[in-house]
Length: 354
Image 1 (tube, rainbow, N blue to C red):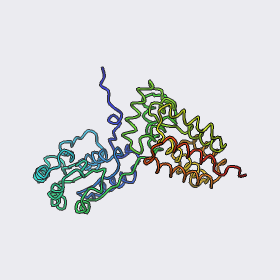
Image 2 (spheres, rainbow, N blue to C red):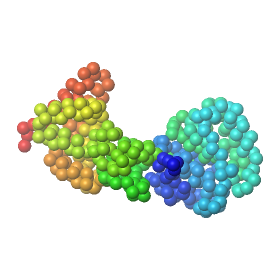
Image 3 (cartoon, helix red, strand yellow):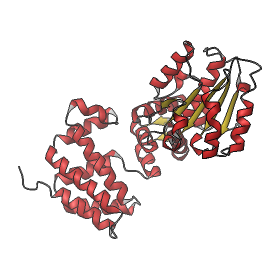
Image 4 (tube, one colour):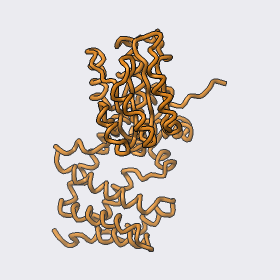
């Protein structure tokens, strides 16, 4: 039986060209290598699953290969990875300080990748300061963290900082399409869009969800199967609810809301999604703000069609009501009544006006 490899590992980027959604950073690093202007202490910051560790490994390989992508050369013995979450003591850093003094036997540099660097203790940070400020010429430090605010200022000031951004839904969906095509998986475009939205900007999470969905759906990714398995509400659900609101059909609203609850959906998830849907309707009113919609072209047309029926004053008042409902949700005892009252208030907005 062939060993199964999860997509997050199988499709881990091996070059800067393969990194998704971080063009500004990869271009900067490429130029720094080519011009030999790379700092000796780099700090990669950003949310989880956006490519910080992958970029650090690619950079480490490129440094010792004189900036060339040569898969035949292996400088792995000059690359040292340290997990600061489990090696966060002063003694661990002192041991590191002693190691960096020894020059590489082969290649030009020794590269130390310190992941989750914010987990170092205050004493460990202080022990690391001198080495980070004046590292040996043959050493480059690449620090990675998801919580930049926890790193002491004296460390930050000694590093060249790169802020990694969340992966957009569009880029994430495009990458999932490429993988699904490579694996001969049948898919609906909006199903991959749901996975990308669920991942919330983390490509690694998107790949993990994708693997689970492929197994669950027997290699046929449909909107219905993905939304059911992930327990998320798709765009069509909110289009339907919004149409009932625009028709001021309160009885149908309450009945459909009850059906959602019977299926196990969370009240807060619903009202949050409705508020975001109303926001999308608002930005759909102008062509110059359409790019703010992270949806497929087909869904974008649906937004443009529905927003024509929804006056801007109505949308502003409705978004305000959903926002207030979200804020009150935690403190109320009768959560269902709160959501139902919000729906009735929205459906009653501008009732009778022409």
